[in-house]
Image (cartoon, rainbow, N blue to C red; front, side, top):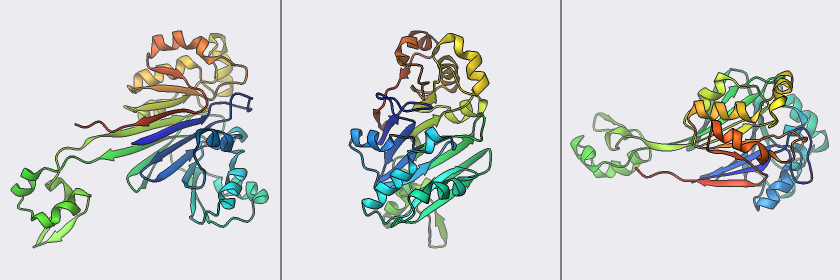
Length: 303
């Protein structure tokens, strides 16, 4: 199961009913935060989740509404007596930006590791899942992220017997191990059936529509996408400032064949996004004008 919570849905400035951009995901004991706008800690408290166990924080880019909550978040982690290292991921310049912000959070009881992205597409592997970072099209360097959880096939006893694999090796092979035994190399595919469907969440914001988004969101169980403007007459403004309209986001969701799309990162001048959703759903029916704290538990489908 993958827990997903869109902590904040605002762009540019926090509002009394809308915190700035942040997404948190939890899987298999790991917690991943993407962006950390102002108010992220409060949104997390409202959800009942803790910042202490966060293992990874990813940043799309370094505009203030996406990173201004970081110093306070680090201090809260430190005050909770966290000692485990924290991995930060983001575009080039991450180390410089974090060091500047840490002027007001200088002493922490844990190490911070910064991993800077430089390629148009990068894959980052972790225990049980991997992240894909991909460049999008904003007025500064900006990345989207996909979280992918692959799922191995079921154990196939007939296949194991056919390959003459002793029972004592079955468990290790099921868990993905590779074994050298009796002059042979035993691999998981020798005891497993076809791979089963995993889970995928794609998150992107502060960008014009790009084919890289459609490509990396392909088949996502959940696509969380910027919807800066819902008003039909704001297309030119979206182009000028390199943001996106609801309708452009819905078109990408349709082309990427995702299961569901949540809109986020609304303009402060857009108090009621739901007003514009009927036309959005004509383009992509499974569209949601997300509010702060919207959550879902994504479950594996048994096949």
